[in-house]
Length: 408
Image (cartoon, rainbow, N blue to C red; front, side, top):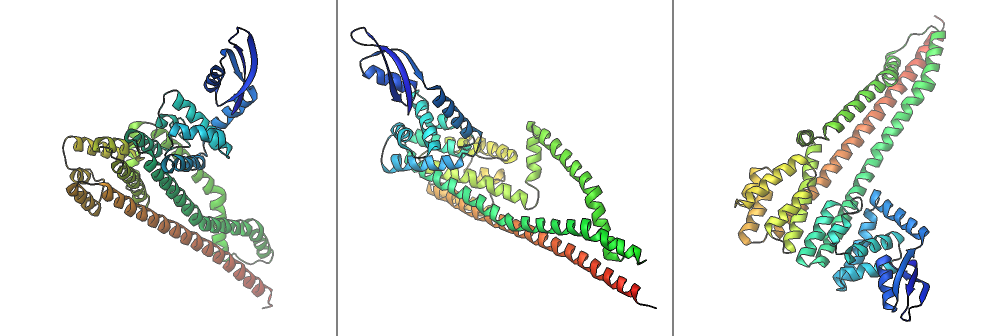
């Protein structure tokens, strides 16, 4: 709530000054009129407005997934379980929510609803808080008057995504530690121990052994060639970035990404999970086939897959069977197509798309574990190899020095 100072005319025509707590200026005007006053001017606190704008700006700039999850959970409790209208739930949260970020965004969403906007249009103002899948699910829930069910699905979707991200981070922590450790060992030997060993061997007239030569080569690579390769890599990444700014460049590069081993299947699984999960939820909410696939298409990130999905959607609208169209444009495998075929025969596609989402989610998790395990093994192997080379270089250098000191 904010404090608004007002100037109004009373029933007796006298000018009245005062202040009132309200959600926004519109709410303040309504409250003043309820007091039997005719508002002349209403002004809010400059500091409070500045603080709110800063808070809303931070929500739009990023880091808002946690806020989205907390807000949707509150709406599920009030609207899904409690049967409260969304506008009333947002108004209550804007007044009584304990967390400031939830309170602020609830106030802004409630303001939009009072101005006649839909909840989907309102949350679309915060793209870094509510992603496209969440927006489309809310849109479908509003069109079918089934927001309670949709809120529960959004909660499961966000929690699954957060869990996947946590799994990836935890799986990458060990390889990153090993790579850091290996790099530390390399730098220690190259810039601290190796110069001293070479100086001692040179003073005693001993030659460099093979491990020492390998260490020199590694040092030359790190000091000379690694920066050049990094520069070339940076320039290529920059060129790819601008190339993907064009529609044709993004389409062609996304098609190439799908063919890269391990990375391509993970991209494919991720997009299949998104559109199958959204399709299952929309069908379960009573949305028709045309609208379901129109919304599901927007959840696909890879432009090559989205292009194929557009062609699939056109074919289905022209009367083609869903399973045949999916097979024609290579959007699903044979086992998945069997599930869709069964759904078409039984008249319910909910279970089919739900099972597809589950199977590809499991496949995505499995591929991520394999990738991180391979990366961890590679990092461990490189660290072991480097330590072995340096250890052999030190041992052989010591043996060479001891032999040179023995009288012949």
